[in-house]
Every structure is written in structure tokens, then in C-alpha cells.
Image (tube, rainbow, N blue to C red; front, side, top):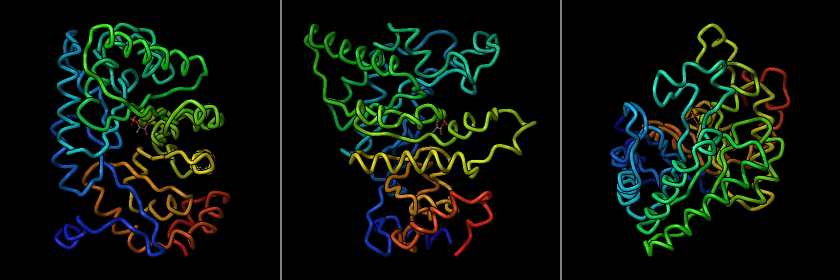
Amino acid sequence: ERGRLARLKHTPALTLDGERIELLANIEQPDDTPAALDAGAVGVGLFRSEFLFMGREGKLPDEEEQYQAYRRAVEGMHGMPVTIRTIDVGADKPLDDRRESTHLNPALGLRAIRWSLSEPAMFLTQLRALLRAAAHGQVHVLIPMLAHASEIRQTLELLAQARAQLDARGQVHGVVQVGAMIEVPAAALTVNMFLRHFDFLSVGTNDLTQYTLAIDRADESVAHLYDPLHPAVLQLLAATIAAGRAQGKPVTVCGEMAGDPAMTRLLLGLGLRSFSMHPAQILPVKQEILRADAGKLAPWAQAVIESDEPAALLTEP
Ligand code: PEP
Ligand code: MG
């Protein structure tokens, strides 16, 4: 099975009806790029930059260290696009154990972009490092957990400020595409606002599931209720994909769902054309894509997301 899958590495990811599907890798460190290339990824869809910041005992990476790390990831992908998510700490990813554990409800607290906007000097440092790395390849900057127009505005203002600071220093930097993660139901429900301000969207189905169902993704006692196939989650996802297509802007799914071969046909049927996942999942998902007819799957996928229990229909037709 493994050997057979390995032969698919250089096979283009095309459905039976000729739809080209983009298969990207999720990585946590620049050293993960060889695994991404080895699996035949055509880029990085999610570099979780917070892993550069975690376990540092209070001494966070400075601009130079971050720049070197992002540059290494970009160069490691040989010119293919690399989507780097700005720091997403808090909740299940504490920056340091003492500070975060004091929060009442970390999943609903100061995490991700909320944390970055509360630490503007730190955020500007990261944005400058990203812009500098963009001089070496295609960098896409991805912002986690946005929900409010004010957060969008502040984020884009800080990005402009970071660029101005580099100009003032006379430091070389590049152009970036900027994208928003859709992982809070409020964002999915106002997706057109996001499409007006961003170049692309990426759906974080792990958090979208957590926040839609009010299930803490790290709480074992409610793990049996954590269901990415709940019709509410699927309908928010479907609406996000459809809105992106209507505006001609790319939409990727980078949550666990994108790397689950049992979900591939459903996501194709909902119109998804870009998937980002752990490198080990790329070939199993590609195998499903090669067997799928995206056009024929569309009406079936609509019926699945409108049913009370989508999971029961997943293995049909
Ligand atoms: C997600 O929420 O689906 C996601 C991709 O981000 P993370 O799992 O890092 O929160
Ligand atoms: Mg998330």
C-alpha cells in the first residue's frame, strides 16, 4: 500500500473530470519542508509559526531569528508558495505555562490575533520578519482567529506600519498576499467582509468545530461531542467555500478535516479546490481525488450537509 501510494507523488492531483486540486502541507518548523516536498506538496498551506515561540522560557525569538526561520522555510520550498500564520498562542498552545493557565476560559480569551494586537511591538517584529522573508520567495501571511472589523483594520494598519519601518531603515523586503483564517462562526457568517479585505481565506475546521458547537477541543469529557460533521459546521464551511468562489478568491481548508481521506469527496463536492494537511496525509488524499468526479459529487454533497446526520451519508453513493 505504501509503495503504491509513493508512486502517486509525481501524479498531478486531478479529478476524473479534470479539476486541478492544490495539495499543500501543514508544517511547524522550517525543518519540516523536506517532508512536504517528499510528499509532493505544491506549497505550504499552514506554517504554524507559534512553534518558534513556544518552550522558550521567556526569551522570544527576535526579528533576525524569525527572519532566518521564515527565509529557511521559503527557500526550502524552492519557489513554491509558503503560507505563514502569525503567532497563534493561548488556549491549547500556551506560550509559557504560568501566564496562560491563569485565564478563566483560555479558548475564549486572549489568544491568536487578540494576543498579537495586545502586544503590538511583538506583532510588528513578526510582521517585519515576514516581509523581509518575502524578498526570498512567495510568502502568504495568514491571520488566525479574526472576527471583528476592528481587528481586520488594526492588523492591516500594523502591516503597513511594519512595511514603513523597513522602508525607513532601507531594508529589503517583498510583497505578500494576506489571508484570514475563518475559524470563528462570526467570521464565517460575515465572510464577505473578509473577502473585501483579504487576498485569500483559509478555513480552520478544528477551531470552527470547537466554537460552533461550544465544545472545548482539549476537554476529554466532551470529546465525544466534538464533531466536524455536525451540519452546522458543514454549512458554515460550505458557505465560506461558495463565497470565495463567487468572488474568485482562493479558499483553502487547513484543519484536520482536509487531511482525512474519508472527507475528501465531501470537500470536493462542496467546491473546495485547495487542501492543506500534515505531509503524511497528502498521498492518501490524492488517491481519493484521482478517483473522484467533482461535478457528480456536488448535488450529493449538498444533500449531505442538509441532512440531520451527515456522517451516515458519507460513504454513499
Ligand atoms: C484549525 O483551527 O483548524 C487550525 C488549522 O488551526 P490550529 O489547529 O492550529 O488551531
Ligand atoms: Mg485554529
